[in-house]
Image 1 (cartoon, rainbow, N blue to C red):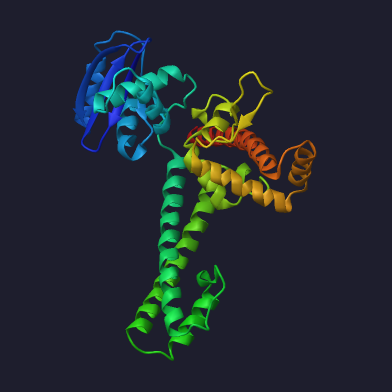
Image 2: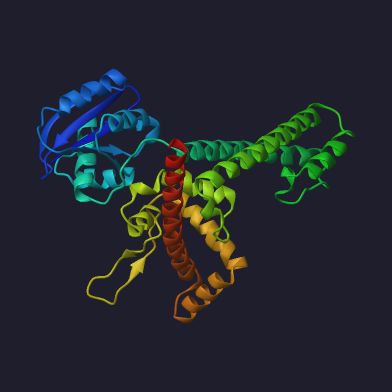
Length: 348
């Protein structure tokens, strides 16, 4: 087995090939273009063995490289950045360079055989692009709302809209009516902030409807999970990037950062909070858990059972998140199989 570790950059990719024991067999650097990617495939062909590519999970840099490797029939493994950094620290060779990083990626892939495999982009990428764009709009709107609050405080300190209300058209209409009694640059800037907030809100609502329609096509069963709205479902679908990448529900839970980490040595079994994994997926699971805690009787009964067994409320919620990860994994597997069957029937 040859593992080719890749340290990817905007203009170039550094490749280091290691054998099954982690010994470096060769290295090269290619351009980050289709021609450079073809050169990389030709270079690795000199190692007449079974091979796989280990690429640091930085998909803005590596998406095109991954897709062209997969189209060429290669096997591609995604290595989380945090794991690669830990491997580099434990290596005998000190320092940091592109070849050192590429070798660390390859050795991390050897050490962790259950890492998810990359695959060609599908509907999940569209979901991720839409949800990421909507989140960028929400961040921009929040910044505009903060600026507007300071301008309103300067113009009319007695007018203090409740938290979260500046996204509502009724509150924005009241703000516009208030600003009609004020002149000057501050009032003019406040009017511009209101117009910008209104425009962003309309676009964000339109995107949410588009996201809901797309998620309904890709993962309809996920929307039936109590507490899982369209945005949380879209976040899980987009970050998962194909549930087929994961070999088991345990691998999925570890990737999502909801599998507890053992921390005992000669003492009773103890586990601590997993602060690793994909934090976006972890946050989506947390939102679903908190919503279920409020509205879902089965989740409420489970939390009470864990607390009665000696868990704190936080520990019980973590356990609920772990159960939810299993449910999400099974649901995404089911939806992926149904989607594939439907696609095949349409093609036939």
